[in-house]
Length: 313
Image (cartoon, rainbow, N blue to C red; front, side, top):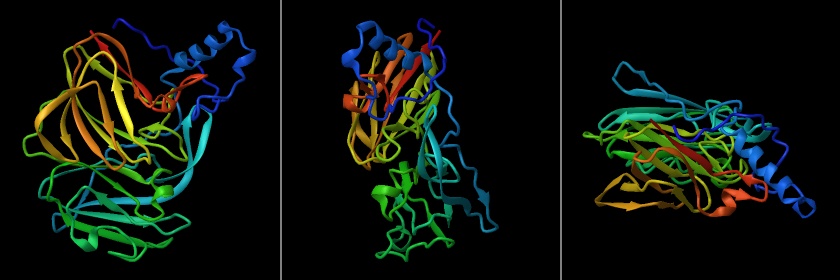
């Protein structure tokens, strides 16, 4: 590997959600640079909790795949020493990753341990109306202490999401979200298949529930091909820019493109899912960030929606 990332100590004293906490007008260039470099040297920083763990189903007697999700409130460490009030499924942000096959019958059992009502909408999936998860329109609200079961046959492949559809501008941005992936009959062959959930709101600008320097790097071998499934659960657009190598967009909202498109910056709108392929042809540690720069870098250096792709020998 040509570039090395060193894990160091990060105190979390700066509010990296905005990237600005110090008075730089009184600093020398050397002092300002030390602040920038300290954040970089802390990457990838350790924090409590990781979201998006794969959730294995329980197979019911009738063959249905059953997924249990418990919505609750907890403190989530977004960056080293920076804890924010969060809502999540099964104690994590993002919630567990659900992967199923086309034609599966699935049951998503929601247990509400929140202090307010909630519901689950399977975003992008074709479901019966009564399973759409919109309180007041397709179902009653799931009140605190109640349980609701969503059951349907999986009809369309692609990168989809599940999230709250109650007080959603707050609940979803606080962490009530997760990936729901339906495998294609003939998936593209890749060495790694990765999910990158983008969010903004009470937890700050995050990738998979963490802000830089606590985001996880993508580590690949030279010559490998990876698939990245972007999912924007936030309130803002996020143009995701990867240095060093292009991205090949192959799907949008679960629908294959008639012709793949090469680009270095992929614009992901709220609610949108975009799948890209990346060929790791160039060695080194490459910056990977939202190119709305106020989401990624400030006077104190990198923060928020920043990670790296590390291509090793």
